[in-house]
Length: 62
Image 1 (cartoon, rainbow, N blue to C red):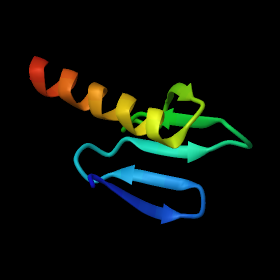
Image 2 (cartoon, rainbow, N blue to C red):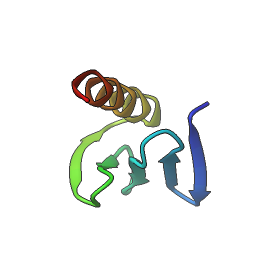
Image 3 (cartoon, rainbow, N blue to C red):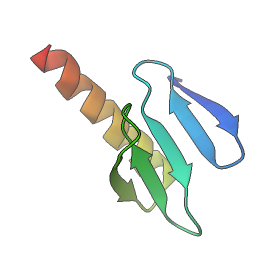
């Protein structure tokens, strides 16, 4: 798994620095490495998949 749980309700990508923050019930905010909210998903699994896609897109353009 490429995510580390850093505290209750927060996960961080070990690969890129993206964060996922639980925001209430059924809402997970996607935080980019610069600290800006970049989106949200309804499930943790969807949030992790979105972050992985963003990481792959970034690697593809670097």
